[in-house]
Amino acid sequence: MRFMGHNVLAIIVAAIAIYAIEFVIFALLMSQEQYMALTGITAEQAQGGMARMPYGIVPPLLAAIGLSLVIKWRNAPGLMGGVTTALLMAVLFAFAVSLYSYVYGTHTEAYVPIDLAHFLVAWGAGGAVLGVWK
Image: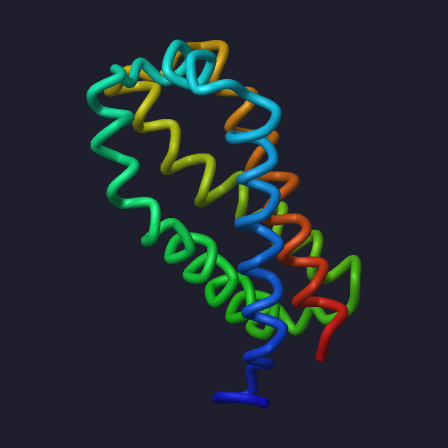
């Protein structure tokens, strides 16, 4: 199924891949205590965030839509085109925006490389799906 030239199923699968990788990194590989220490989030803030968990698919879905748009604009289909585009977008947009939480917020220096790796792996996987799946 296509919408405005974009493969909707590929976008959904890319969003699920991004979401799943984020889950593995931030829920399985890292304890809640480690995450709170690295990001400066308190236990009360973490509990408040639990109520918003159902909205957690929204950022990966928007990222997958954006990646699909940019891959198409760059005319960069295929595995390498999708991954390269996604890695560029991960660093230049996603990671760049997340740095605000380090520069002006509570994220620690130790969290910065974890966040960068998270965007590279998750968005790279999403870009691979979108680049390969026409």
